[in-house]
Length: 69
Length: 222
Image (cartoon, each protein chain N blue to C red):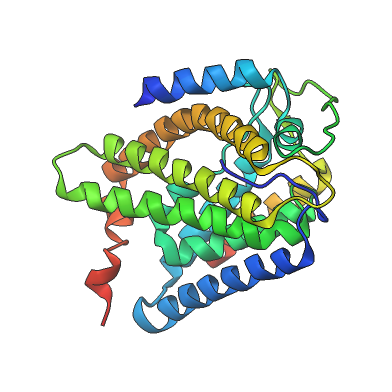
């Protein structure tokens, strides 16, 4: 099952081309997709959305989890 | 994994309201379950908070694979917390995601249904496989792949039913495009399955009580 999914996934990737997730989604439904650009992140790993908001919300959830504990 | 990455305005207002209403009904059932059937204690609330943080944290990380994908840990949420608490967790995560621009506000209802499918199917498969002599890693891995597969199917169905405003593409082409997208997603589902399998089997080894906390729904029903 793992191999089947991996092969299908690779085929789908080759057909759709090297695109970011938002662009791939827009193209799939027929919306004009803009190429995703920006920073290369750390080893290619990047953060989506607003970075500051991400850090603030994540910190708040972790603080809430610690307080509940 | 499966997540409708469309901006507000892609779905008509009727469909946004429809998906929201269905999501609210399911959430209502989750809350009713937690209030009347399966009482929630502080331990479970802490677990839910940690799973919310983990899911939110990983949801935003774009992995440099197949051009950029992300995981969301919904199967892990289902296996560890169960569908009722899982429903509340994915609601909170989706609200936070919309707040930072990952998916539109109007898409929360539809995305909640997609994520609830992943949570519930992963939980159901994991529990169902409990009757078979399989190791925890395999049970969690199979549950994850199946959950994410059904999540992708739900995502495709919601988009096909709703239609996209201002787009002239016919349904077969949209189905073809979304099927390719789902196929790419399933490649990442394999990675998520390994991750979930490892985490669940580790928890089973060091904190088996955490997994024992989630009994079969039928077994706890009054």
